[in-house]
Image 1: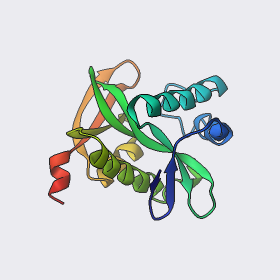
Image 2: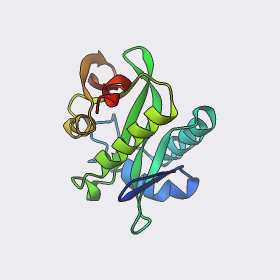
Image 3: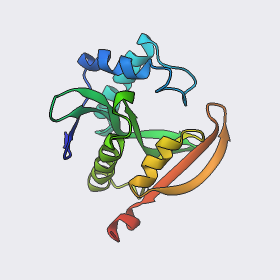
Length: 171
């Protein structure tokens, strides 16, 4: 479990399905994905993260408000194919009613710290569809910088941000 000032990040359980489905099935929230998730895709998302915890010791974690215990999204590290390389990536999804409160930034910053304390990865990445300005602005807010853009089938153009371990030691 990761704890921040306002949030708890914990492993998913299938009990999180309804709250996650509310987020992942929302067209506005998922506008930068090929399509919102249906029930089967949402279940698979949780199962994939459970597999990641078992295999790697990390994945996307449930983001919960400390004050109320409400599930408001997810954030964590997964291994992703970024322009042909399998790289550690910080990902996040926050319920739209909690956008613009800094929760994605707070969670992502805690995950970044966790990753550099608990893994040997020299760099951590974030990637998204080039139109997802909120996502890459969150990456920048935790100290990442623009690395590149590349063409792909899923996003047309994918925007990649990165932070190197050495850069975090200078802070």
